[in-house]
Length: 162
Image (cartoon, rainbow, N blue to C red):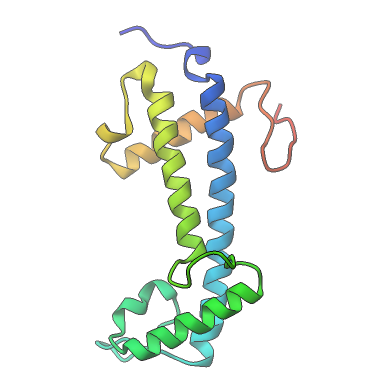
């Protein structure tokens, strides 16, 4: 098998997908932090408890451990109200949707596209890459390759990276 050169892998489409991936990753991480902060405040003020241990839940991702549906709904409603007031939860987004999870899902969709596009010269596609660690490593390598190019401009800061 011939080893593809940089220009075969780092096509304009791959470069664009890397930029989108980097921006969506920052967005997803930022929103996750903001959502977690709001939920922590709500859960601290009005605790919800794990059924099995009786311990207070301090992370929205653990609300499934409480079967008191009314308490969980109150917590989510209050958090959504605060997230909307802070401009984190868009007005046109359903209350049942989490802005952090929506952003993470968008990031994952770009990851799939990036793996498929950058993997073409290697015969790699997202549907054949089942291992999460392999996906992460492939994304790290492709992102590093594109970011190391002399013409790469950081999509967040708009600064040249060389």
